[in-house]
Image (cartoon, rainbow, N blue to C red; front, side):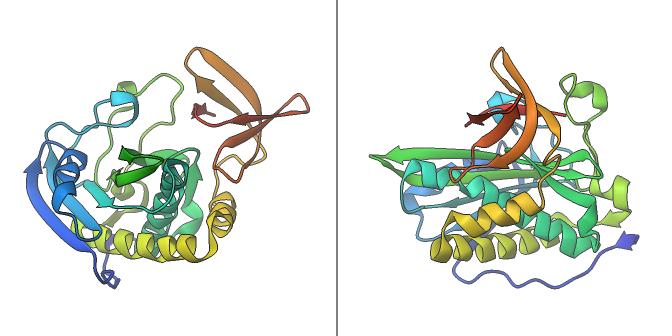
Length: 256
């Protein structure tokens, strides 16, 4: 499949959309909307001048790629709010599959990346503000390499090499069109989460998981564990089987 991609998706009702040409960070702009928030809102920008990834890493932001953030007021605890990273991953998977017609080419890497042909296509960054035991607002930042990817030498040694949608599939998807599919997908999975809880989200995520049942490495600070990726638990934590012993890892960076 090649050339420009077309395809329909319905923008979710009651969700605002803010389209910007240039912004420092879509997450930062989304956070600025919090005081006047009346419902969920997506922010998309053609270019970011200070994009960031996990652990404060710089996220390179050439025009033509996707830079977007969703902000909303989630119900429940901070732990429940954090499960939205899995919803975002499923929405990304759906958007990519729908727009390329190549679902088998995509997979989900714990905790928050989307892979295309084994390379890193997209990343997710959650930021929140607490309110007692809950969260006053949650921001989900998403970057997708639609037309270009950073050079391999720009990423950490041993990390999954970055790839682009255009380079791997020949599909050219405008960021605005990608946002419509992404927003529709997130709304669908959020409705499942609200009505049925995390169980169907977990099952759907595991069915798309990269390296499930294989040996992976999980690094937390200076500690690295190596074991079989067995599953994720009801809280989204990674379960590794290390020499027959199951170990629960709530947060880590995963290497293959």
